[in-house]
Length: 171
Ligand code: PNS
Image 1 (spheres, rainbow, N blue to C red):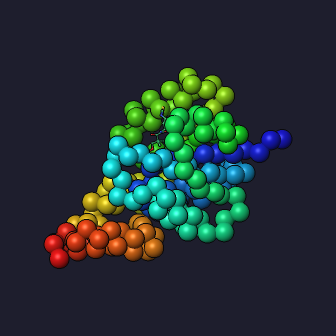
Image 2 (cartoon, helix red, strand yellow):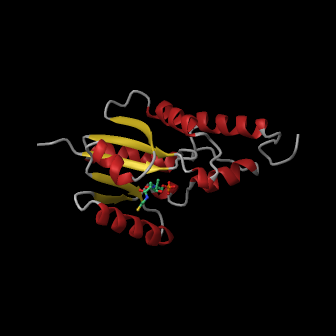
């Protein structure tokens, strides 16, 4: 039987515990998981593409069946290059559904051999998003237990480079 390879695509700006929980769930179901990071300059990411890939690699550690890489262009093209059949997306709330449903149907239209599988993170992460992580961090909120410590340290470096304390005050 061929290997079941799943691709978990996203901006991951930055990765948080909700994402890592999905990776753990994928590992139980698939033979291999590839985290595929999109540059997404239109979203004006806080972290460069190289930094996001490096931060994720650090979080994955020596996980034997997980890899991280960047991609550009169409996700279905990346899937084909990676010989992967399954797209993983995290589904948190009803508000995610419309956007996710559109993407799943468009990806199926572009390549009917590819399936999208939705995974639901643990309840404690269900409201978590990278956008909220950045907003709360830069306004000085406590993210302990929601974001790995090394990622919090990187966020602090960004805050410092921007001349801001994590509380949002100017230095
Ligand atoms: O974490 P995000 O920003 O919600 O992830 C969105 C992502 C990267 C999955 C989506 O923008 C994507 O797949 N982009 C690649 C370009 C593409 O294939 N677009 C058509 C999707 S139907």
